[in-house]
Image (tube, rainbow, N blue to C red; front, side, top):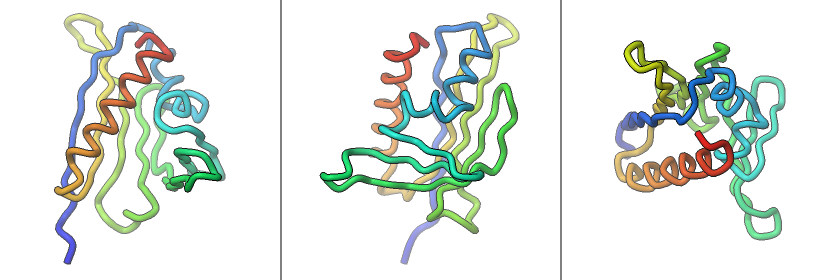
Length: 134
C-alpha cells in the first residue's frame, strides 16, 4: 500500500540578475541537460531524461510538459505520476527588494525517498552553478 506523495520545496538564490540567462537554464532542453541529467531529448511535449551510460543500465524517465510560461515557469509531470496531483515545477522569481533572482523547485516523492531526492537536487544545483556560474 503506497502512501501519499510529499511535496518538497527548494529555494535557491541565483548569481545572476538576468531572467533571460536563468530561463535558458530551466526553460530549454539544452539548458536543463547541462545540470539535471546526462541527456535530455524532447519528443512532442514529452521530455526524456537519461542518466548513466546505455551499456551500464541507463536510468530513463519521461516527463510531460504540462505548462511552460516563458520567461519564468515550467511544470512537468513524470510518466509514473500521471493522473496524480504530483508535479515537478521550476520557476524563477525576482525579489522586489534586492532584484535577486531565485530558482524555486517544487517536486514530490514518497516520504521514504525525501532524503535521496533532496540529495539529487543539491547535486543538480551544484552542477547548475558549475556550468553557468548561477
